Image: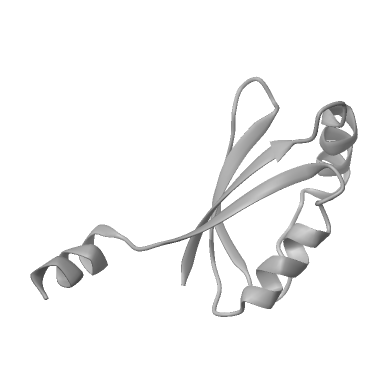
Amino acid sequence: MEFIVHYKVHAGQRETAQARFSSTGAPPPAGVTMTNRWHCVHGGEGYLHCQSDDAAAIATWIQQWSDVLDFQVTPVVGDETMAGIIAG
């Protein structure tokens, strides 16, 4: 499955989150493939696209950052898949 993950830095945690990102790169755990990541220019939030068949792996990744970030995880499908769904 494919997912768009929106993250938002907790109030007062921007510097902590940025320092952790700078030192680790925030790689995904085994079972999750990150295909792209975008950061809003103000530095307080962003989005990433990832693929996984294991919701627990995504939860593991999010848990590692939940002290400084809030998350919204949304399953998504591409144009080709949606066209097939619409066509029935």
